[in-house]
Length: 109
Image (tube, rainbow, N blue to C red; front, side, top):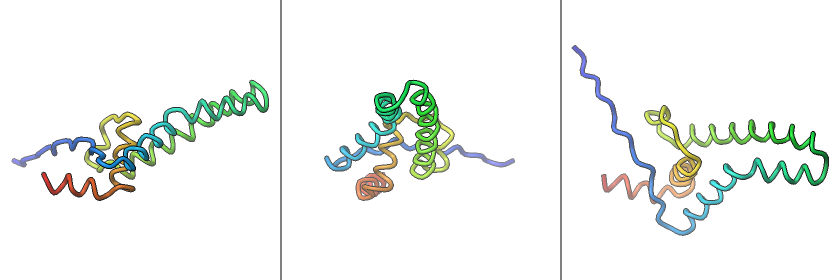
């Protein structure tokens, strides 16, 4: 009989420096509000109908960007769980931009 073990889920890494937290915050704002900002800018410049289609298109594009960031940053064993925009931004910032904080955290474990 095989012993199948389920790996424990790793917590979202903590960002220690102000630079890393700022980058994570800006990434969070981009994921969360860029759809609406782009739509309002197009609505002001062009027409309501064009803005509506840009809204749909930007939902798709930001969704693809969110999925790419999630697939790059979050470990493969944990990708089956649901993550918020903040968690995706924290993981991406910790793994790809501020690697030193994650390495310090992994050394403690």
